[in-house]
Length: 238
Image (cartoon, rainbow, N blue to C red; front, side, top):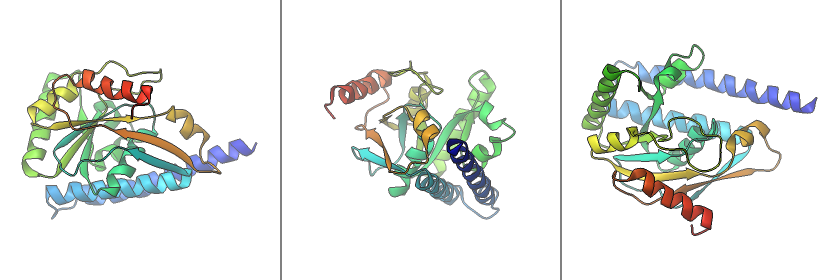
């Protein structure tokens, strides 16, 4: 019975927090006198605030192993296991005042409940099944990087949540985006089965999620270089 009330309280908190920040995102998104650069900076700051409040409630700490690069115009290639992944990464980026945008599947924007949350928070939709949609997506990204010189890109190269062990085969999108926009890449590995971590939260004692930040690499052989980072983590070399 206590677990039922615990879960109910968690979901009520997350829904209320989401509604509150959707309004904040929307106000920034539709601001008539804001530049693209300042708009993305403010949206990134607001996403960080939202994520930090969520993690504080869940009593989850994020431990960074490695360093976030000082430079910008970087594509962060991140493994994807859980709803927590974006929140965890936004927690890290908020400490370094990084401006960035998430790449998300078109279907998330069409969701009647969460769609506008993703849209107003500054995510960019990509429709992998639509050639015209893909062309518009690449034009949008090109325009953003042309006008915003301190922008970064956050993407899950596996394409969707992968619930098994290991790393799922990468889709080609991340490598193509990095090449087309002359972006360096940083591989990032979020350790743990964090779908279960979220399910069991909030915690009485602080739960720690470890995030491994790799070195800057080029876009060539992205999946191979990512697996090098992953295998080094498994062997305990990092």
